[in-house]
Image (cartoon, rainbow, N blue to C red):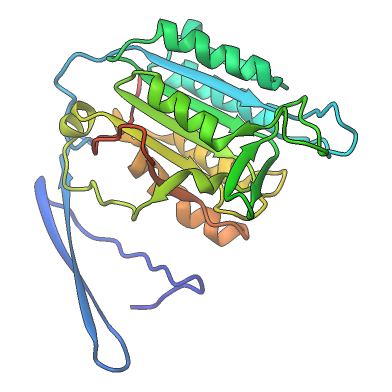
Length: 288
């Protein structure tokens, strides 16, 4: 089987209705062998199953920063535009009521804190939440700490920076069924424990929805990401073109990861957010 330059490969397979077992074997030049077993569940109706349980409300907080008050921090051109595209697709194509999706353009740190605190009092443990951020970010290798830079951040000090640890505390404290973080910012990858795509492939949609989850997908690990986001381009394109009634976030991520790798220098990441209460489920996007 031929491999791409990035070490990935694609293989088209025929799926039968129900469970399909696949065994992937790799052998190196020294004859060492490793085998991976993958089970895919498929239905001819186009989804692996229905949720088959009561579904809570879908909320989203969208934070996008183009303009920075500190002249020493470079303004960006695309985050607000990307945030608007995400808002549009969530509220028109998926199960997000516009009254529960709030779009903050160029928010300050205090505005972000207030938004998260307000939501924590409104949302219920049966509900689902997306937190989205696009803008500058920074990873401090000395402190091993990551930050988002709100509109009032200053280069000289971190007083108005929004720490990954603060975000993690909110994600732990906001009691939802499922929380999905989508971050398009440099150094955003420091917040979570990464995982391989399709590790949940053998679980049906109903089971994924039943188990609480706290997941993240980000545009990179600890490297800077470009202003014009290839990551968000393909993410939103997949959401716009999707025809599956139910699509887990892990499956969504897997559908565009290779496109990002092949068309940008960045390595997008997906995984559980550490120490926030993930129990192995997944955020499910539901078409209207």
